[in-house]
Image (cartoon, rainbow, N blue to C red; front, side):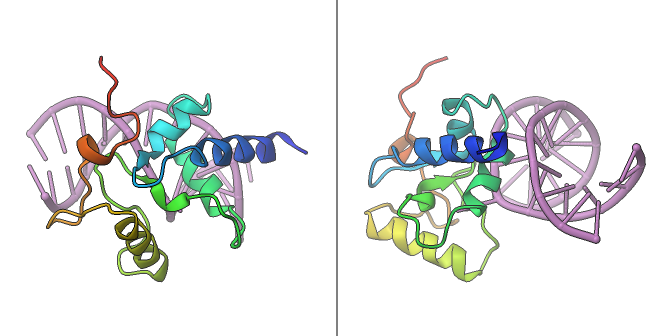
Length: 109
DNA sequence: TGCCTGACATCGG
DNA sequence: GCCGATGCCAGGC
């Protein structure tokens, strides 16, 4: 397969390791996949994900703790429902506390 | 080739 | 907390 397809697979592989009930940011995934700060590349890979895939794409959110899919879209609603189903609570401003649910939350500078 | 856009991140103001 | 500018990597036309 070509280079781009290989990158997508690597990204999906990392996303697959995000534990149930936790979330990771696009940036987290990018660095873990060896892509440096190419966070936008992660969004592209998730968009390329097959509809029937079992990869937990809903556990990937932005660094502000908010969902990046279009507000009000069916996709975004699906993501929120799935996260809440896993026990993740949203704040009043529709954001998620990364300190509590974040994946690589125990790193130190 | 050039320009615009996007499931992003970070820094200012 | 809400913009706007920048840097970033690909896609689409």
